[in-house]
Amino acid sequence: MRRYGEAKRRPRGGGNLARAGGMGRPYFSAVTRRTTSNTRGAERVLDLVHGAERVPASLLLPKGAVSAPAVLLLHGFSSNKERMVQSVGRALQERGVASLALDLPFHGERDGAGGALPYRNPIALVGAWRSAVREARAAIEWLGGQPEVDSARLGVLGYSLGGFLALMMASEEASVRAITLAAAGDLPDSTPYLSLLRRAVDPLRAVRRLDGRPLLLVNGRRDTTTRPAQAERLFALAEEPKELYWYEGGHWPPVSAIEYAAAWMSEVFAGQRSSGAAGRRTMRG
Image (cartoon, rainbow, N blue to C red; front, top):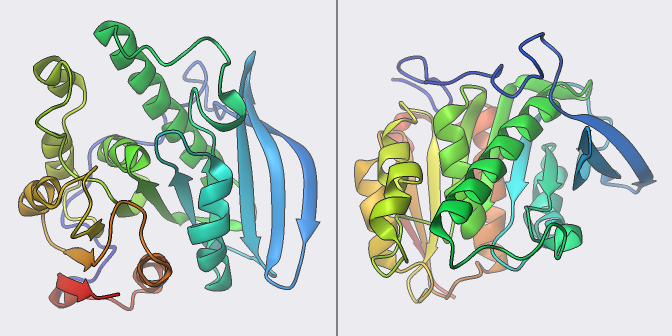
């Protein structure tokens, strides 16, 4: 029986597209602003830097981390890295999993930098999306290069908008070995410029490119932002091993669902889940 984390064929993409000038140098370097420690481990608030480009980020490391698995955290629309750190980041840290949370373009500390999100300009909107995917790929490369991290055990967890971004990035990046999408799914039918966006951003095409890497969807039965039908469409096209975890709630997952997602990631990296465990779970409350 094939175990979680063992893709049945080599995924598309690779880790070198984010490298500067094709010369083997990582795209991002980092400037640490401050480091704090507690009984769970350490947090480094930093900037990922490439030329004039600066991406605010937060790195959580488990206590005594040596070759720890690590997850890139991508937040939702109008949110920020801190919300991901304080929710799923802490839950992962308690399970021995490191994480890196970013402020996406036009969000968090980058809100207002470089103008407003170009809602009414579809070409500019697609360009902004592609820039965000590029940043996410470069960030996972940087994360895998940290001495406390095992580069063979990297994952991504995205919430809402960050879930769409996480899926697109993972479909292009072979180094991502496990994917969790919370409150995400296929594009809604009401999306402006839907046919144009699908040419550049198509979750249904992207999920088929995961090529058997473990996938967890975490969705709310009463979510009116990412509706259950969107999650069902995405889940139907994903290959095993996959799991769709339903919670009885709206767009933001309850603590129990966040804890489940963190435990799932930890167990995948530890090789404690087999493809026979895939299926649907429902949480009430």
